[in-house]
Length: 202
Ligand SMILES: CC(C)(COP(=O)(O)OP(=O)(O)OC[C@H]1O[C@@H](n2cnc3c(N)ncnc32)[C@H](O)[C@@H]1OP(=O)(O)O)[C@@H](O)C(=O)NCCC(=O)NCCS
Image (tube, rainbow, N blue to C red):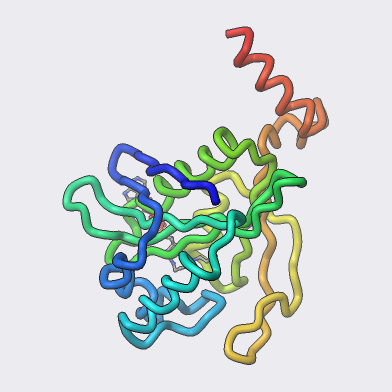
């Protein structure tokens, strides 16, 4: 199983999540408003979250997903979490997701953390494509994925089942070297090769 590193940004430290983060992460997973568009109901208490994290980071862990707790540099409390999951090595792609405590919304911290995650996925894991699934009514998430350069690609009808209710989501994709590919100048693969050649030549 791969050990993922800490990721550092000007204001944040992204640390691989551990079970003892449950106390602080409960401000996220226990908040109905934060969890409104998630694919599970809010957790009822810290013990329930600890149990969930024990499973996700223990018996249920595989090398197709990784979760980071996002901490401030100072003070160093947890603001939220970002993750990749459904990593497909053969196809060089993964899904991403993110949750932040309400008191940290509107400060640019989610954008900063996700920029670091995307950079890690494209430049260290060498993925080619990232996907984000967003509830049609989740306005802040639509805004943030647009800000990060994701493009709306389609609608997945009844794609998510949360507590017996099916939910339709919007599919967003971000492709490495996608801007060049989009303009029809080169294919996505060519764009990635050109980027690699450029790095070698510089
Ligand atoms: C989705 C979510 C992470 C977005 O949070 P957010 O606060 O809107 O995003 P950011 O932290 O990047 O903040 C961006 C805002 O901070 C503002 N901002 C303030 N200071 C800033 C700074 N120093 N740098 C950048 N932006 C700053 C930006 O202008 C922007 O404001 P706007 O939304 O009015 O345009 C958050 O709402 C959340 O956790 N929601 C619940 C969970 C969820 O739905 N997850 C997604 C499932 S797909």
